[in-house]
Amino acid sequence: MAAKKPENMSFEESLSELEQLVKELEQGDLPLEQAMKHFERGIALAGVGQKKLEQAEQQIKVLRQADSQTPLTTLGEGESL
Image (tube, rainbow, N blue to C red; front, side, top):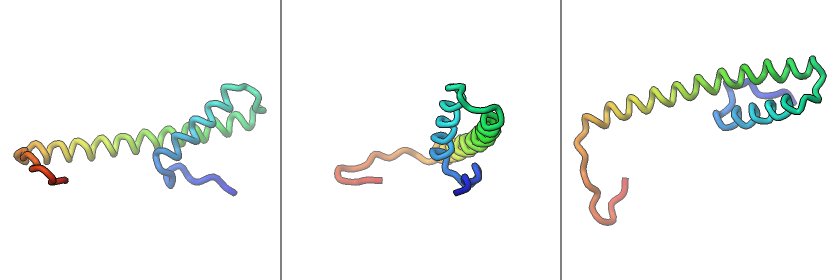
């Protein structure tokens, strides 16, 4: 089965695969060609992961900005968000 494209993976999936690739590379038992493929895949996973983190950070900034303009209210007993 072919590996998913990094951009089609969740952040958690890409991070998990990246961790596995790093472990395999650190062991030093891979032939050079396979190590290069792992490295290339790792770079792609890291890049997509970084982009997803930046998008999440931007969303948080937008939410915080919108929230800072909304007065705080206290929830009554038994109320939830």
